Amino acid sequence: MGSWPFRVLVYGFLLMLAIYVLFPFAWMLSTAAKTESEALAIPPTWIPKEPTLDSVIGIWVRKNFALYFFNSTVISLATAILSVFFGSLAGYGFSRFQLPGKRVLIGFFLATQMLPGVLLVGPYFKVLTATGLYDTRTGLVIAFLTICLPFATWTMKGFIDGVPLEMDEAALVDGCDRLGVFFRIILPVLGPGMVASVLFAFLLAWGDLLWALCLTTSEEMMTVTLGIARTVGEFRIIWPMLMAGSLLGGLPAILLYLFLQRFLVTGLTAGALKE
Amino acid sequence: MATARAKSVRTGYLFVLPALLLLLAVLGFPALFSLTLSFRPESGGGFSLEHYRLLLEDTLFHQAFWNTGLLVGLSVAAHLGVGLAVALALNLPLRGQPALRLVALLPWVVPDVVTGIIWKWLYNPLNGALNDILLRLGLLAAPLDWLGGRYLPLISVILANVWRGFPFVMIILLAGLQAIPRERYEAASIDGANALQRFRYITLPGLRKMLIVSLALDTVWEVRRFGLIQAMTQGGPGSLTEVLSTLVYKQYFAFFRFEYASAMAVVMAGVLLLVSLPYIRMISREE
Image (cartoon, each protein chain N blue to C red):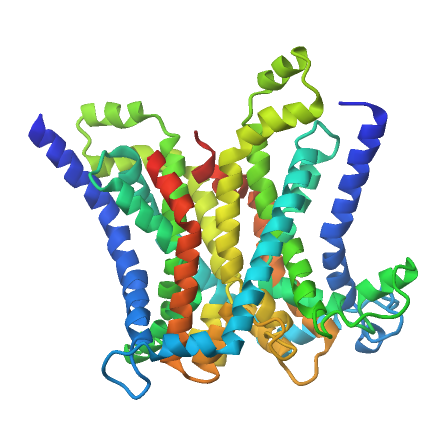
């Protein structure tokens, strides 16, 4: 690969990239392990002198993080599963059938991705309050479908496009009906695509702040991101605690990504890659 | 045969229908609700363009509009620049490349609220790491107040946003690069094309679709960006980093001006749809 000056240049660039990407995380970890007085030292220390887990334990206990984790997990998982289920059905319809008006329908699904959340939060606030779903996990799941369902439809369509038509035809000849083809033939081979779409929808829901801020109010319904955001707004910011909270809020996403990285990358590109 | 075809069309619609109805209910209905709300006078009843007229005079709205434009324009441009450079580098046969690819996507995975908070702490004028590094390297003479002053706050928000957002563009472009057949490059080399010419005549055309897709999705996401700014500055100091999403949120839930907030959100959605129309047309044409 090229001459040695070129190689040095590329490796130098990638080294700087790694530092650029990782340094903020390292700074978060370092601060989370400091005492408050050390975090306020001038100039700052880079490596904690007396590393301590006090902040991590402190924020977990003081802020009821176990509950926040439960809420975020239930909400994100329910959103992801519902989106991918309905998204797969629609994706199959788009992938396999010559539907009149298909272009308009696909345009509609794409256009829904373009609507900003703030266009919807006001009506949601009113409607959920009127139906008793304000400040409930169900309300948030319904709201997150607006972001996750169009994406899931699109990525699942991409994955289904990649499954040979002959598989459907063989099953149809064998006397399977369409729903049977979908559930018994197509879904089983879509494993990786489903994991990718579920993961993607999960991360979208997990990372949200806007909807949780607008549609919940009680401590019992607090999500992880909202809990962290509330902590920044407090009168006196204790930085090691806040960094410990950021660590806790980011860790599930990071771990999921590290374990399922292969799937996520294929999921991101499934809708776009095929020519 | 004709009936079989009609039946197959019906089956196809039945597959699409649940998701379509669900989307109309959870998204179509609230969007229309917002639209009608934006034409309703605050005193209730009737139809009025009053809110839209007020928007024309509202300097706060103008500032948020231009701030959004700057944030989106500069962030997306930087995401494309950095993302393309990194994708090209990671597409080379290098040692440690899978590990780097893994690491490079991390900023995009964590919630943007977390990004906002980490960077707020990095930017801290006295105890933050950024000033410390720049002072030690001699690039700064005195600590800089990254989130203070007239112009710096928005720039600082954008810089944090570049860190967060470039990995998405990078990963899409990298997938595009890997899909370009290697033979094309070999053939071009044999024909005597240099690196720049190969980039211009093979890489760029090969990436065309991925560039459009990542550009469109990134733009939409950055216009919607909320958590990062809310966690980092809440639109402040003053309204220097106010963007449309934070301003609409405030109009709703701090000032309780639902009708006015709806008008703002409708303008925002209109601009977004207009900007993404070429993308929507391109994708739905292909089907």
